[in-house]
Structures are given as structure tokens and as C-alpha cells.
Image (cartoon, rainbow, N blue to C red; front, side, top):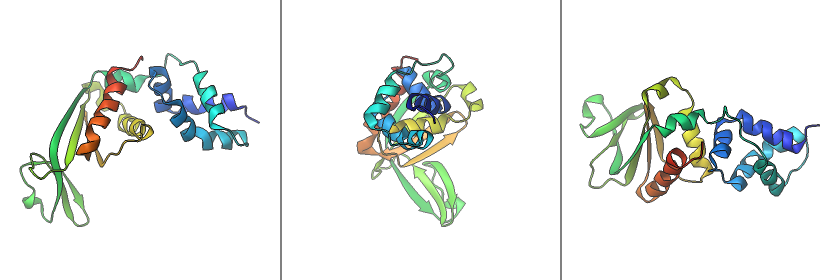
Length: 188
């Protein structure tokens, strides 16, 4: 039977987000413990309390190989713009010049429009360094990090060296704050 500490360490080592969060010092141990609890219980074949997982997580010593995603994100630029909205059009020739993104759907083309007075969305853009285009998993890394922070994102787009997130305007500053902490204030 696997020991709790061994199971926790293995779960963290196998997930780049968890490993990087622990190394960076930006981890919320209670949230992470709740996230990994079912996996650890499955591995150990017993019920494990959140406090036990938190204690085990705080004892993990980061390895030097952890943090590749943070290294790439650290050289990124963050921006935030307001007054965006989504619009559905039926044909490609109806796509407005203010469209940032247009995606084909079964009902036509869903467009993300900028500079709209009635726009209720914010656009958060992460401009990645050139070498990030060869590194898979960055978008998933960012999304998982934001999910652990319990913030609401509407849509996520990835284009080569750009990750674009849309959110309600009232959530945008909180999302930007979490991303800023991840990218610029981590200890990695």
C-alpha cells in the first residue's frame, strides 16, 4: 500500500502546474489539497483528511527541474482591455472589422468584437516569447492555475504566442492580479 506522503509527492511531480505552484510559493495549500484528495485516496486506498494533505504538501522540497512553464511565462507581457462582446453572424462576409476572433459554430460564426460601447467582456492577453510556441501545455497550465484560484473565465483562445482570455468585466482585475502574481511575483 502506498504511503500518503509518497502519493502526494508523486501527484505533485506528475503535474507541472502543481509542481510549479509549490516551487513558486504561490500555492494555496488547502485548495490544492482538495484538488488532489480523490487521487491520493485512490492511490492509498483510504480516506485522507485535508489537513493531512496540507501538511504533506508543505513538506515537499521542490526539484530544480520544476518551473519550465514559469520560465516561459516570466518573459511574457500581460494586457487588459474592456468593452468587448460576442456576436453571432451567419456568413463569413458578415464578420465585422472590429472582430478580434471569429470561430465557426454549427449556427454560423461567433465573433469576439472589440471597441463596443455596449461590450460587457474584458480581454486579457498574455503575449508569450517566441520560444513558447514550441512548448505545449502552457494554456492548460494557465487555465488550471486560474481554476485553482477560483476565478471565472468565459473563453480561452491560443494563437501561436498569444493566450487570450475573456471574462466578465467585474472579474477581469482579479484574474489579472492572479496572472500577475503567477508570472511576475513567483519565486521560481
